[in-house]
Length: 122
Image 1 (cartoon, rainbow, N blue to C red):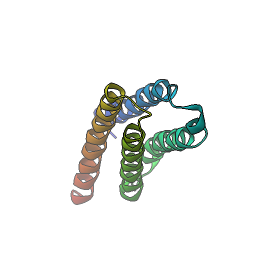
Image 2 (image 1 turned 45 degrees about the horizontal axis):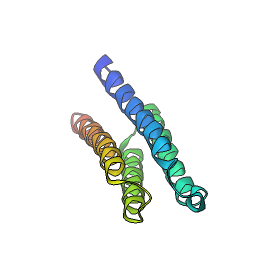
Image 3 (image 1 turned 90 degrees about the horizontal axis):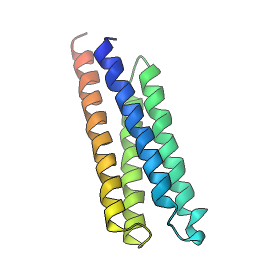
């Protein structure tokens, strides 16, 4: 693994951690009735995403774990969208959080392309 690949993987981990920090601050405004339901689901999804980033970084065969990572990100996007549609997340916060998720998605996509290229070159 080259230094730039390690740096890229570190960057995606940092982006996910930044997104988690933002998510926590955004969820503070959710109604009390949703703190143990929707908030808990979003938190579980965010930490699942972080866990998968770490696992993908450690695995030699990354393809299936990367697909799990991509699916987890899609689930998080859906949960954030539902939170906005239910009126728990103001538009500005939804827009910012979605932007963070989109940036993570682009990084995951690049990582998946790199992994595919690595498979082809073998």
